[in-house]
Image (cartoon, rainbow, N blue to C red; front, side):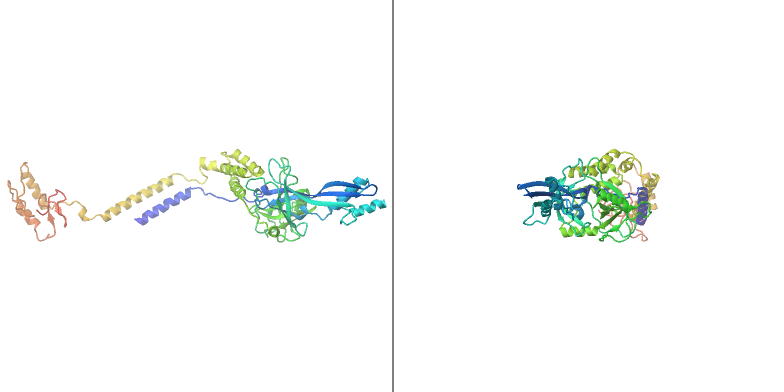
Length: 503
């Protein structure tokens, strides 16, 4: 019976599981939203303070200061403290800005035609030519110019409203090549109370040729009219992260991707993250320019961070944002909205979170909201109600049958009310028909267990009853001397009338 009950329960459970909808949960693939909050604009310049010692005529000290642009590009925040990785040539140049300052101050003060560039020039006047040559670096005891150069790096985060001043940063480590990674640390104020959003770094570059990727960066300072630029690309042949870089190639050959991405490099996406389509993690950085664009791999990024003593990690903002982003991309807009609100509490001005929050609020409870569909409408894989009714009926019948069989098995012959033997029943019926209606007389003091003596009316059936009760073919069977009911082997009182067995 236990097996039958278990089988019925299993059938019912199976029907219930088949009737329930399958809840599939997959992290969205090919998105850039995990990375774009951590993409920043990087601008580097050299501040040159120069003093020209003019002693051609009367001795004069001419002081000027110039800000010389070094490079612009895109950077990636890699930990909540704001550590940023970009390319060396964004923040460092092989051009001598001191030469630029010397050309500019000499042309302004002496009114000569000298281009404002990084080349060393000559003038027709021999005396001016001598003084110009002594103004160029390196500094000597007879130099006509005193020059002090400092490098300024400013990062502009992806926030709204836009930050017009940006955040100052120091250069921690640069690479040996212009396209080597460089590491920056912010020295100014932080935007959020718990740090900044970070970009997740992948473990390696996909080896497969034609692997889809995304490139994200800024062509100018982030603002209301300047959003992040996102472009699709595909990896070409080769491994990830050599000095020459990994190439790009469209497997369908519809677009010349190196040319397309090279133009984006020239517009400001130099150092932009290359995002893998598998899980949305950074697999490299965009390098090159002109008609050629390539990628350095994530291993080079990790190596540069290790040399700089910077550990990439994610923070509380990223955990809250990724949880909300997962709900958003699986169309659970009602559940996604509070998550994006929490992100904005931790990092005010997060452009991506604010945009997705607005969309979530618009679609919350609507026909596209998977949460409202599950709550209001039946799931797509629902079954009719009759399987549940049948399952319940099977369980009910099985339980009833089991209880009945268990009751029958445990019941003993002593528990069943027995009828007196036929002779005793006949004697009792005869005695009942002939006896008067007066109450029965008390028992005789000398009565034994098998003989009933009534003082007022002895009758002839008693010897026959005594003979039946003491017959040799039933030595173990006893009957009550008062009512004639059958007694059990260990009964001390009659179960029918309560008369004591022994007096």
